[in-house]
Length: 193
Image (cartoon, rainbow, N blue to C red; front, side, top):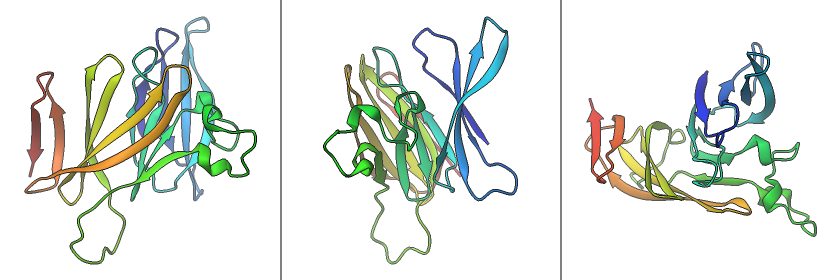
């Protein structure tokens, strides 16, 4: 299981977790809230995600971003915010009443990869780093198992929330990264084997 703290913008602390129930073939994205009045942690939301989901990245919230998490699965990255979704996982801000296509209200993108021949399995994200350039402007770097760095940008509007997710090839490292760190000055530190 993977657990991250969500940016709750000053409210009670919210944690997002990936859970796989025993004897189940699906994975759940679950939100837990620290209820300070009851002094306990309460499971508040749960939705199904890609069965191979293995990594969560917290997205800045409040006035700095739309909140929620990026969910990394083999070959794809998806934006999820259970507080702003309907029961089918569609983002409410992106749903159009006239549309017959509810999948248009989902934000997901395929991981770009080098064309070095046919792939036997989808590309997997091994490590990540995020960088907050200035208020409301942020991006993520994803290090893949092939040693590629992918830049993830989440477009958002203060009144609508997240509106788009784009993944770009950024650079190639000599080996797959174990850890990434972006300094405030913009320099990137990479730990490789």
